Amino acid sequence: MSFRVCFPLERHFRFLVADPMCRLLLVKSSVPVSMRDYLEQFAWTAKNSPEDQSHGWGCAWLGTGGWQIYRNIKPVWEDCFKRFGPSNYFLAHARSAYRNEGIEVGNNMPFGDREQVFIFNGELQGVRIRENGRIGAEKVFNFIKRFDAGDLNAAIAQGVDHLVRKTRYVRAMNLIIATHENAWLCSKFNENSDYFQMYQKQTADSTIISSAPFADGTGWQRIDNHTIRRIDAPGL
Image 1 (spheres, rainbow, N blue to C red):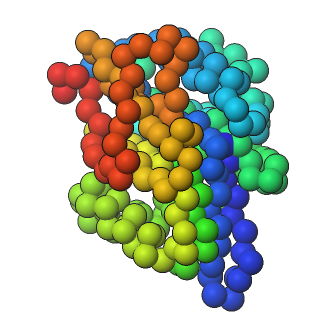
Image 2: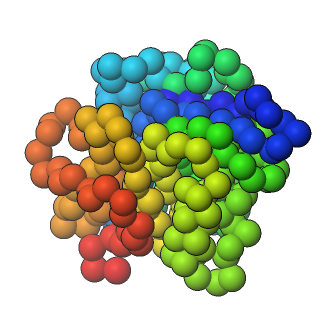
C-alpha cells in the first residue's frame, strides 16, 4: 500500500493522500517476543494480498534511546528478518504505491523520530490544509501533531475531525501513532470494508493490531469502524 501526495490545485493547498492498499501491523506485549516470527506472518499477508504491496516496507521498534526505524525498497517478503531481535513493542508497514509512482525508500513508512512513529493506509481526496511533508501520509502525521498539547488521544480525535471537515471525500483513514509509552489506533472507512477493516488479536501477553488476519486465521476480532482508542498490552 502506498501513499502519494499530488497537488492538482496547489495554489489552494489541496492534495491527495493516497496510500490506499498498504498493510499495517502493531505488536505491543508485556514480554519480549520474536519480531522475526511476526514479520514473517506480516510478509505472508502482504505477499498474498489481492493488491500489489511490493513497493517497499519498513518497521520500527522501541529500543535504547527511543524508536529505531528500518526501511527497505524491497518487497517485505524478499527481505531477511534475522537482523531483528526480540522486542515487546514494534510496528510495520508494507507499501502499495499509488499509480506505481514515488517508489523510493524515503517514502516508506514508518515516519517519525525517536519520540513518535506513524503508519497509515487509506485515501483522502481533495484535502484542504497547508502542511509540511514529502507525501500525503507524512502531511497527515504532521497535521495531527499540531493538536498535541500532552494528550495524544485528544490530538488524534481533533486532528482527524479537522481532516474530515477539510477533505472532499474520505475513502478510508487507518492510522497508528506510537509513543514510548502508548499506541493509538484510528480506523475509519466509507467503502471497501473487506479491505480497510482492521483486526485485533489478544494472547496471554500481547495485543496484535493488523490490517489483515495472519495465515492461522484464529483468534482475530474485527475492530469497529470509526474507532479511536489506545492500544495496551495485556497486564500493562
